[in-house]
Image (cartoon, rainbow, N blue to C red; front, side, top):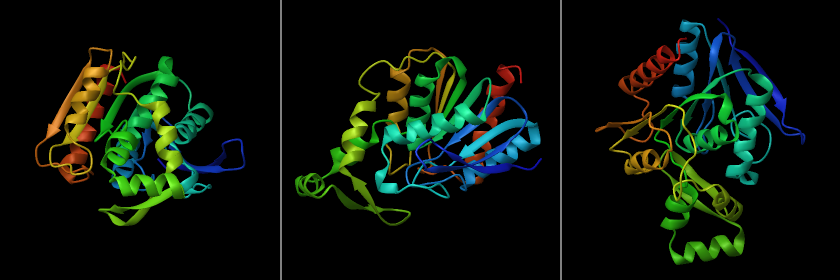
Length: 252
């Protein structure tokens, strides 16, 4: 089974890159992380998993990421949530199963809240809702906050490569989408995978998400020696097993 690829105009001239597999529903939709794209090991593992099962699959790049158009520094949580909704609404039908990595876990939850009747289940991989407030703004020294407010952006260290920009718009717009201070009104099954050796997003975040979700079918799986990426063979195998169980419960 070969993935179909294309570019989708989100409506303002910015084209979003996507790839999909035809197959049975629910369609598995992968939401990448911050400053990441759809070419990573988790997205590729899901493509192979879905191809082997004959499962429908969709992956994409947010604007300013990967092969999509737009500028990274123009992006915000709401803008990237809308990117996810655009590709889902125009490239899938019926039920979807959202898989979100890091920031993609936040995007998946926001997407599910916007399309609650379509979501069969959610899997979060080191999901990081509210990271712009808790892990970026909350971690900044006073001098960094002052520079961000004055200049509109600052560069922050990146453990996986060169420094990347954080914009004032990302922080301020992100406050409109915070989830961990109240109930997350979702009742679908949710599975949260998180490494306890994660240095970027505290593993306790998974427990906070679980506590805020309204539904009862929520499970948190902690991997004691797992890092933030959860991209080792054993981590990818756990992801595949988690999805297989959810799909079996769904009757697929």
